[in-house]
Image 1: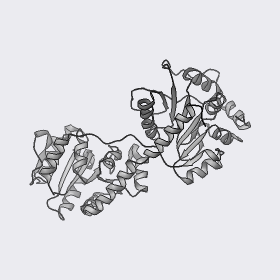
Image 2 (image 1 turned 135 degrees about the vertical axis):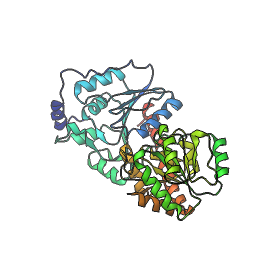
Image 3 (image 1 turned 45 degrees about the vertical axis):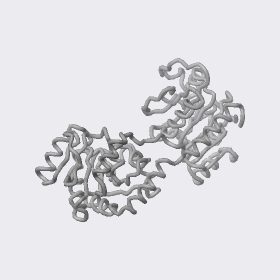
Image 4 (image 1 turned 60 degrees about the horizontal axis):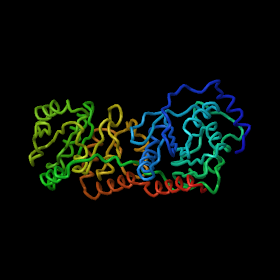
Length: 398
C-alpha cells in the first residue's frame, strides 16, 4: 500500500508513546471478522450482518463502536481503537481479524494502512461520504486517497455517494452503488390469538395509536382525537403511555375531564364498541397495538424529548406513521422515511388531528404504510451480496 506524505503527517499528529489502556477480553479461537461502525445509528446494518455471519458461517464477530450496542450471542462489542500507529498495531496484534468491514464512510487512516500492510481484506458498506474522524480532521496531502485504496470493495447507498468515493480515491472497479444493508427486524412480537380476538372485537372501527406517549403530549393527542371524532364518531384511540404508571391517572383524566368512555388494559377491560379511548398498560404490548392500528403517532416527537420508540417498529408492521419535529436518536431513520414519503410530519395538535382524519381514508393510510414497510425491509439483497464478498475474500478470492 502506498505510504503518502499525508499519512506521515497524520501519524505525527496522532502519535502516542503507548497504546490506549482499553481492556480487551481474550480473542476467541478460530476465525474472527471485525466489523466497525462510527455510531449506533450506523451500526444497525452491521448488527444484522453479524447475526447472519455468526449463525450461518459459525464465525466470531468483533464489533467496534464508540456507542453502546445491544448484546448479541457470538459477538464481542468493544470501543473503537485509537487511530495512531501504536494503537493500530496493538489492536490488530490482539484480535488478528481475518477481514474487516467498515460502515458509513468515516476513515481511520492509521489502522486502515496497518490492516492493508498485513494483507487483511477490507470492505466498506452503507457508504454515504468519505471523511476523516472529526477530531483528526485537517489537510494531509494524499491521505484520503491512500486510505480509500485500503478497501477492496466499497458498497454505497446510491450513485451520488459512489461518485464521492471514486473522487476520493476508491478503486473504480470496487465501488458498487447498490444500497444499504438490511437491518434487523424491529417488529415487536405479539400473541396471534390475542390479536385475532381484538381484531374481531374492533371489526370495522377506525383506529389510531399514540405509541410511547409522554405526559407532556397528552393534551395534543386529546385535542387531535376530539377533532378527528367530528368526522368519524366511531374512531377509537389507543394510547400506550411512555410509562405504565401513567395509565391509571390518564384513564381517570380522560373519563372525568373529557367525558369519554375509557377502557383500561390494566383493569382487564376490552375496547368495547362504545369505548372512545383504550389505555394500554404502558408499552409492553406495542407489537399488538401496531398490528391493530392502521395509523400510529410516535410519542415524544412533538413536544417531548425526542421520539420514544424506533419508527421501524410501526413501519415493519404496516402502520402509517405520524411524527413531530423532534426525532431524537432516530433522526437518520426518519430521514429515510421522509425521503421515501413513508411517514407524515406534523407540527401541532391541529396538524395531528388533520393528519389522522386524512389517513382514515384506507387508500391513503395503506399507501403511506406500504412505503414505510418498503423502507423497513429494504436491503436484503445488499446483505446477501456483502455476505458473498466476505466469503469470497476469506476464501482467498478478490
